[in-house]
Image (cartoon, rainbow, N blue to C red; front, side):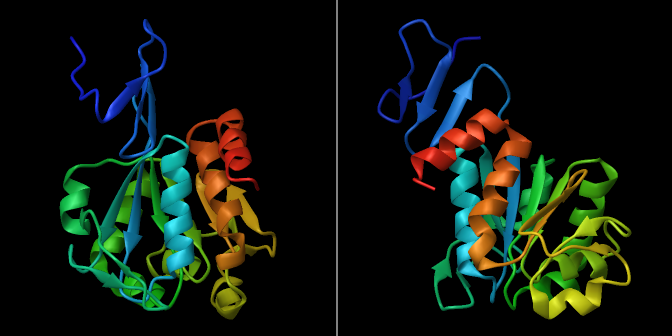
Length: 215
């Protein structure tokens, strides 16, 4: 089938290449299906963890969908930064599945923990063997919904005591156990996002993204 895209929006790489870059979404296409990530957000989410995760994954060529747990209205994050989701979680799950489901931390983790929709999305993700990623206080959401019990993880120090009885707790910046990826907080957000980028694409691609950001 003939490819259809606007020459204003997209740029080909080479005259005969089937690869092109979307200048709007910073996505790289090369004849294979793009990996996808669903990044959840709710009032009180930590904006650094959210923004760095979504941005780095897009730089890595991952199709990122930002879903508001309480709808598609603007979300006020922990330091009053306002984020407009792409869609609601209810609508996003209808368009899945996604290769990764990502939870930022911050005080919003309490709302993630209380949401049956979040719990169902996490359970479906785990059941299908797809990636679940959580940073800062968000690993406590995994416990609330019975996800990844017995696996190795890390978190923000304030929720450590909630997790040590059900998980193998580590204080490493990023912990990967199979398809579970966890990290500690705002200061480890780049490490977290790059680890996810590597897992969704490959090490070479993640290193290119890292180098381009001067990390």
